[in-house]
Amino acid sequence: MSHRSSIRTLLILSASMICATPAWTTPAMNAGENRLVDAIWRSHELTLQVRTADRYQSCANLQTKIMSILAAVGARDTRVTLGCSGLTNNAAARIAMQTPVPVTAESVVAATSFDSRTQLAARVRGTTLPTPETIERFPAEWRTVSVTHHGQLRLGPSDCELLRNVRDQVLPHLAVRIKKERFVCGGMQPALVVEALTRGFD
Image 1 (cartoon, one colour):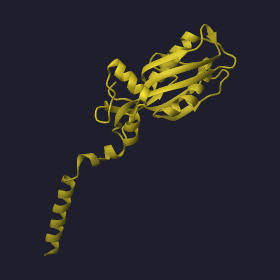
Image 2 (cartoon, rainbow, N blue to C red):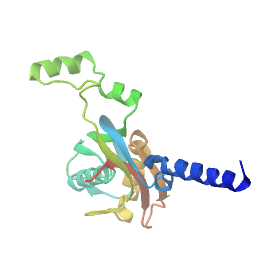
Image 3 (cartoon, rainbow, N blue to C red):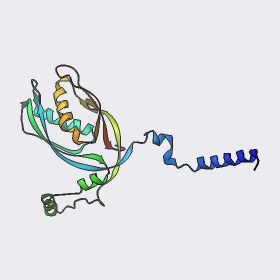
Image 4 (cartoon, rainbow, N blue to C red):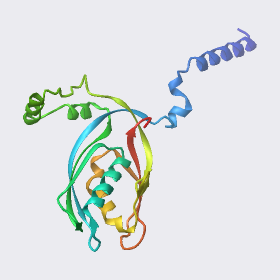
């Protein structure tokens, strides 16, 4: 084979390899621009101890702020029950909610394993508990969220300790990555920016 024929053959083979490259190996995908992941809902029941050393807030406002913070990081069906009324600077909040988690073998097993009490309650109510085959799956995406300023939520210096309590006691249980934080409680504006897994297309 002549030198010119060898070059022509190499060019044809190279073009064929380029045309055969699958779409999912494009640079955009490899760079992480498509952030959608397959997810399921995970139920949580947590207790948040809210302590604000020298600042009092109304229990109603405190409940609203906690629910708004959780909504900002992707929670749904959230219930917050506070064991207080009037003004408080030390309260226990019982939280029930659902948040997205990526689909893994472990997360599916955890979301479809129920104790005997839950199974009995489902039978009494006539409801069907999810199984690994029937559990709801949906697209979710990682979003960067400023927890202090999200939607109608506006947290100021008086909410610094509340936000820090949520970061320490609640966020470690969720699909949340801390990107930026500033907690110098005592007059300075707090900052908390996270990357949270939230339902896609919402």
